[in-house]
Length: 259
Image (cartoon, rainbow, N blue to C red; front, side, top):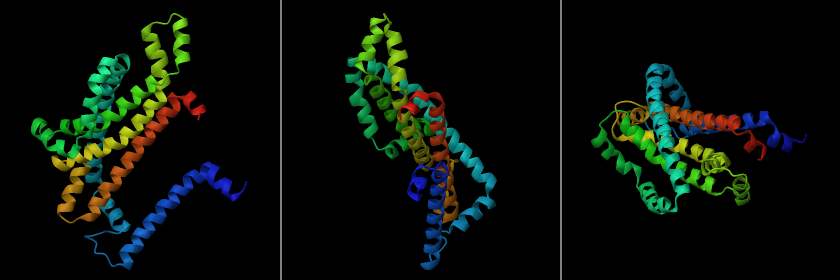
């Protein structure tokens, strides 16, 4: 095996290369702080961030748990509401023409502008954060589900109809199953947006969560704590994303084989 083929096809290289890239980025970050003599309150070193983790592990874990629950709760809420609306759009042209412009209008609204209103309407609890996550996740889930179900090959639909399948069987056993890979693509896009949505909501009105930690540490110039919060948000986003990848891997073996 040549060096080029090992780098591009080896499973160990697929793990090793991202780790090397991460360490290279951390090294450049550390070097930049030392070479340009940047003050710690402007930009901490990676070592300062690690020290913050060891100084406040309980506090950071607690705030991570708050953000995690808000993110996952809002994401599940967006699935529960998004999938039925996508089904209605696929089933009825009238519903599609009625809802699509509205969905586009809602999706185009800057979510940071909605966050203060959610606080006014729902207070400072978890609900405004979950609704914010719902607002950012809803659109990709609806679009991916509707597009996937509509792209079912016509010959498969005709075959099922020739076997006297009912409308429900055609809808759920053919169109929905055919759309599952595309639905998972929408879910993976949405889960990354879900973390952003929860942080936006925590910036505006919250007494806990990693967004609150970043905002409060910024006002006290504790940038090491802010970077620790950002790092935990990144880790949470990666874990949630690859959790969905793993779920797709086991639920859709036929999609994996067709790639």
